[in-house]
Image 1 (cartoon, rainbow, N blue to C red):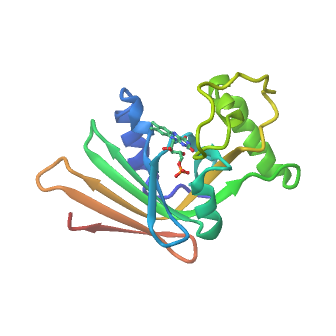
Image 2: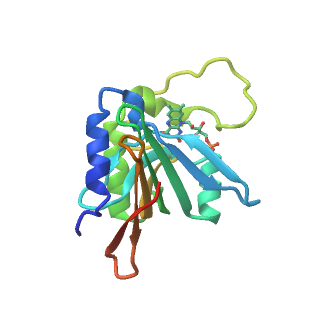
Length: 192
Ligand SMILES: Cc1cc2nc3c(=O)[nH]c(=O)nc-3n(C[C@H](O)[C@H](O)[C@H](O)COP(=O)(O)O)c2cc1C
């Protein structure tokens, strides 16, 4: 599987903005069941090896999961402050949540679980996100480094449309990338 043409400008942006940790916190938009948009910040974890899929982690009980199960499309909006460029990546999201059914996706989920800190893992043992708060703090629980909690899910965004805007330069530059039905990519420079 070959890397999409937008991968190298995105890799360059991640590299050039690496001194700013928030460069890995894009916004992830979904569509609510009533058709209204929903948006939130999320941590970009990594690319799945040898694919163009971007990985994120989330809580199975969060609203975005309900949205994605009805409408699997999402859009990521990512602004890099150092280089002043924006990427918007839209496409379908796969949800890795199977427990014990699909060995491959389970393995992937486990690998990501192993990589995150215990502090990050603890959040998946907290009470249901978005429900009224009944306690001040949450007790830390003993968690197995190799066994993800059921609430832990991995989201895989597989972009089929990407828009890249560079504010730097006179004039600005803007590029669009669209995946074709045969899997190849069409790149087009457009007016900013
Ligand atoms: C800097 C930052 C990073 C975040 N990272 C994540 C993340 O990786 N995964 C996640 O599910 N929520 C993350 N959140 C919380 C979400 O923005 C959001 O509040 C939460 O997921 C509930 O969203 P939902 O109810 O729309 O599903 C992050 C928030 C901030 C401010």
